[in-house]
Image (tube, rainbow, N blue to C red):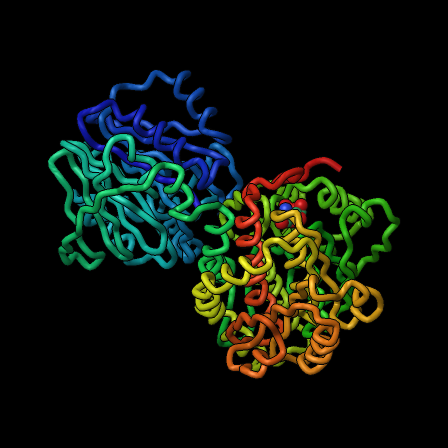
Length: 609
Ligand code: AGP
């Protein structure tokens, strides 16, 4: 997720762009840049780090006056967060500049072709292909060149493009990434969201996928990518700035919970090979032979990422038949773990900066292990120091309680499982079935999100309870752990997660009419056994909230409240089953008046021991 802003009008555009970037910084903040057209020339300034670094760089540069420009704040997906990789990206002749939010899936193939044709690339980004493609097709009309370029592109984009050869024009386009046009008096704006332009205008049009807009001081035109004119409605914005950053949600956590279908698409994008029932992960830096010779895997992580690791353990052992151990990074780093030549260490971290996880990875590497990182933040320390890895592409997670990173981590672990398992025991049809189910998850997740209002009503009933138990078996056990962690983090309610069968070995002593018990009881291999555990709770008058499979009407007779989720493969159920638990924790915390996005005593990135 990156932020784009552009301006054409009669004002000096630099202050407008910088202010817009600051408003968009919540969308990404690892580097930033601007491109100005001063009537004749294209001037580009960019820097790594926060927007204040860009401001310092601008102060050091003698910039000419300009009334047209585009700007970008980056959340890296392809290439480290360096000055070179910061947007805008330019063509070989330094006449065209592009800012982009999204992922160009076929960037490698396009780049190879363009390089063979003589284009010189200077960055590691996927975006740079756009600048060169537009250059290739430029024959006097920027809009037509953008159109031709986009027809060759697979993936998602929200872009703004300028050319020194058409100094009064910005061309924008979107497909899967948001883009809004602001309509002022003799001035026009383009941005990833309206927060970047709200101080100047409340009149906006929202572009739809595969639409192109051209802005000049005289007005704007909108067409489809196939060059058919489209009429757009000008809408009046009534939201305030804070609401806009949260896209209308009350909290970042809720916004991030609702982003998950899109995040799963991003985590899977370009990685699944349906026909072969397998997957490609380019960043592993391991040959097929090296992958096949891995005879033991250690996954290490903290908190929510550790819960994802457990699901990874179950999946890899079930399908690749390679032994997996999951360790808390804080324990691993201080033990004397056994690492042999065939041992692969996988570290999972949303932030890529967690001190214990980083130290565990360094310890493993010191002992000769190859370490792979499953990380969200591109260019973070774990991403840089690991020997290879996979980005989860969840975009910035602002809420301290991790939600979309967890489901994206599990999605990536299932992709990694496919890669490994197809080199071992998994058959092609079984692999194809997993690929097919993975593709169906975003839609199934959206259906669960539709049930948010009924989950909020359950939260009303239980918001004043001070203890909760979360139980599940098999793949649902880590989900129970994650449900309990979410609740305690943001509502300060004491909550414990257990394997359902362990209840009788102790926690059952706690059960009475004041103890809500959340069961993850979907129709899978442990179903009947979990039903028996439910009976044990009912017999002691415990209150039951069940996460059950759609169609399991009998569950209504067993539980006080049932939240239904669509069925999927057992191993993929965690990606769906955790969503109602995130929502339940969220609504309970809100009912208790807690600071959901910044819970007490917690930090987003734990960089201390
Ligand atoms: C999750 O809700 C927590 N905030 C916390 O457990 C977190 O998952 C843990 O600190 C690990 O963070 P990381 O994934 O950034 O390494």
